[in-house]
Image 1: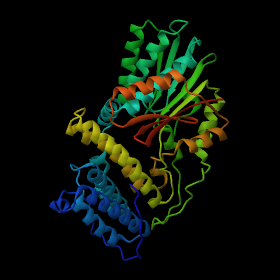
Image 2 (image 1 turned 45 degrees about the horizontal axis):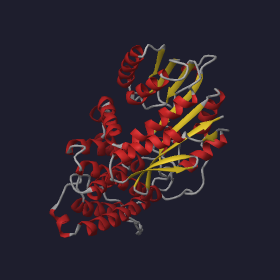
Image 3 (image 1 turned 90 degrees about the vertical axis):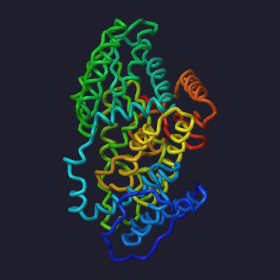
Image 4 (image 1 turned 60 degrees about the vertical axis):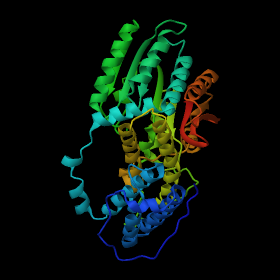
Length: 425
């Protein structure tokens, strides 16, 4: 899928917007392949109009997209519906009164319990996270197999599946069960409470000395004092699809959303630089990082819109595959795509400090970590082999594990979805 972009002269903004994406019989006049190409062309044309402030023409594009897109159609139709809704949301933000009225906090407050349940389903439905967890647990258990007091800081995942697996592996290490403390950072208090109950129960069944330290704060607000690090602890930091939120910055994008920025450079960012230096000052034995393998931290709307279409088309295709082979229900598919849709909305509609889904490729993360004087560590061969076995167990559906220094990538066919890397001081 190689889309082309276009731009048109500015026109006076029109506040009549197509904010819903209904299905329409007009979509049946195209063959699926033709419809997909047309949707890509319309989406990119619309993104160009929004970027240059041509709201009337953007609205015309949205109306045409709504005739071809559908939240219940094929993967391209569903993807187009999500991106069109994000563009419409971006337009509405130009009128702060209208936007606030439509997004009143009492009506749109996040359901964190539902979000946690949906993310749990995501990790169970796809081998992406299963493979990632295999690599993480193998790498952590091997690196810390001779340590007697271990402190692991989970920077945002809070997934009991991961940490219960790790406790079991550590328990059967060469020195017997070590003393383990897990600190979890999350704004979701229910997630923190539930994780604590599960891990305390797991540790008791393993006859392991265990301490749980929940921190109900954002990663932005995390300080070293909160972590309760004590002398003699072997320390590891783990970030799963979360460290990129620290890249949020004031981009100084003007009111017309003009395209600017450099696609090739890795710009210095004060917050992430300070955070990584703080991690290094604590002398961790290991830092493990999983991130979305795409460049969604570009300043220009059209640049990251193109990146987003390419990246999320692979995600939607893989969702379609597990749906078609009966691994998930139609309702589950919608819930999975709601998770992804929230990322798309933030990437497309938001700017400045509100835009937190700033995914970057592993090469950019390598630059940032190297600037903080971290060094890449080779992942354990056994971990990669076990991850490959997980992929092979899924059958011939298109998942791949690819080594890519300084780590590895979990791919859908030849398109990377997640990157995994390990870092030492």
